[in-house]
Length: 103
Image (cartoon, rainbow, N blue to C red; front, side, top):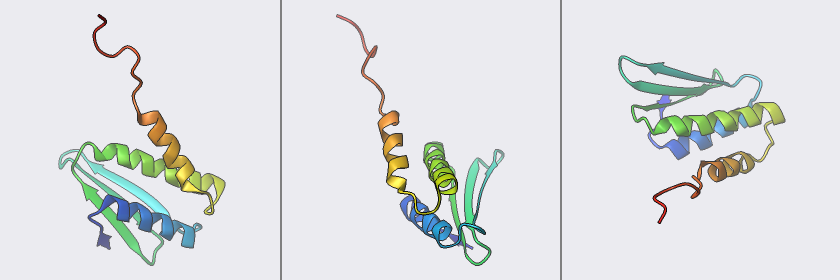
């Protein structure tokens, strides 16, 4: 088991692992409320990648990773994941309408 410190490296290596063997790759997330820790694990029974965090803002990152894996599983391992992450970034930007005081 390898804990990866960088989120971007974890996502990149996880996607590579899935694309190499999509039939046997599994993605697991575990949250322990008493510890306040979230652990994400991607394995294919030969290699195991883990990412551990206790930061609340990493929940959004986990949601993006879920969407990437959903796209890979539904559309196939050769799908362009920039489509998935590109939509996420557009939807994540708040609109300016209705913000602040009217003068």
